[in-house]
Structures are given as C-alpha cells and as structure tokens.
Length: 70
Image 1 (tube, rainbow, N blue to C red):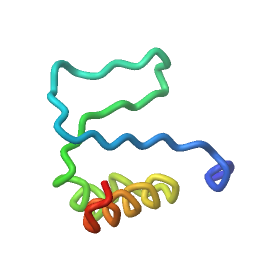
Image 2 (image 1 turned 60 degrees about the vertical axis):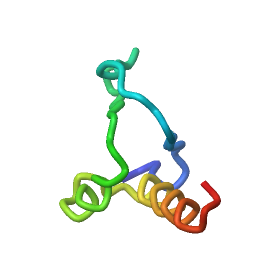
Image 3 (image 1 turned 30 degrees about the vertical axis):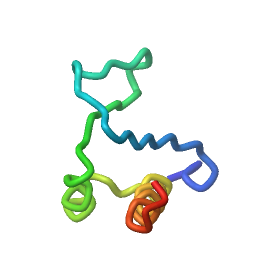
Image 4 (image 1 turned 135 degrees about the vertical axis):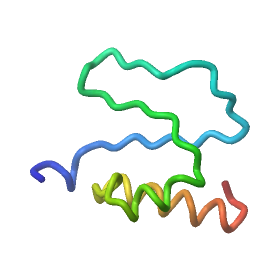
C-alpha cells in the first residue's frame, strides 16, 4: 500500500449527467467507470471499493449531498 497516503485521487460527482457510451482511458492502468450513486454503499460493503483515499472522498461527497451543499 505504498503511496496510498499521499497519492492523488480524483473523484468526480456529476449531477444530471446522461450516459452516452462506455468510458475509455488513454492509459491502460486507468479505471474509469460509470457508477450510479445508489450502488456505492453495496460496493463498499462487498469490498469493491476499499482504498482510503477513495472512501474519504466518497464519504465527504455523501455528507455534502446530505447537507444540501452538493
């Protein structure tokens, strides 16, 4: 898990987005995935999402949305 504490994580939250086609990345290591917000809790519970940086971002987004600040 080297680099997890200070590695950059990009998390995008889109509201009113419309799915057009499957995402693609220029770097084969990229994982770009269209995930509906309602699926996130189950993905965390299953262990599909487990890295600390991603979890912190998702929980922060959840809290902002719950407070109406999203």
